[in-house]
Image (cartoon, rainbow, N blue to C red; front, side, top):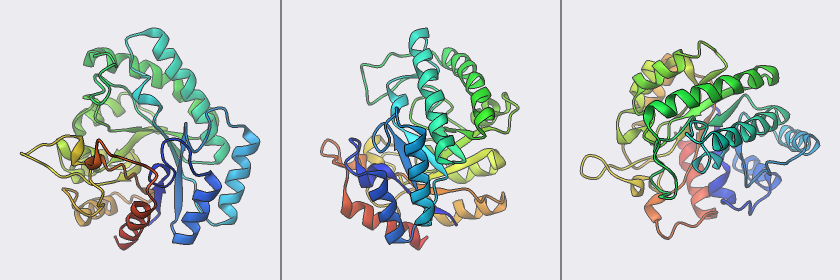
Length: 285
């Protein structure tokens, strides 16, 4: 299995570690790859030359670069009701897809839209219908770019009160009728409303990439604090999840995205000790 680590636990949200340091860390820990993030590890204005330099460095270290991610979409939505915001999100996404192509990744993580960003009360509430229609319009435009660059769009299931169940995801993805778009399935994010195994069974080959983290219920549900700092503790049954992934012949990346909201309001990243412990647990799976 290809096992990787997302940048944030190692380098934080302010780019405190370079991509080269992260690649060195992954090589030392014998990870299959890393997931670099645009907006901190990588500048949105990074050049083609620098991307190719990073890719060559990773290849020399035998560290894969199969996906990239970003925190951009929490503040700017492809499904926004405001047309200026939606266009800004499209413009960013085109540059983001280009960065992915320069790095040689297979899939780029994109958040399709938000009806509500619960952790940011300054963000507007948008109707589900509006987000559905506007995000589809945006993604269809981005698919033209993705095809030209030969990268896939992987839409992540996040806590935005949009596409809450695997059946909604299937309906949404099927509407594009395009193999270049699928889901970046986050096993921890889905635990509030369902089981990870059910997403895999229903979505099958539409799964482009997988994020691993864990979530602990409280009173049959839970809030952001349910995202813990122990990959192996919580509702995710990794044996069952991996068994379902094997059934669909999944060979994509398994990338740990460790953001321990259980530590709020004292969440501090990067956290070297947490990165080390998480890698050890990931490799034990």
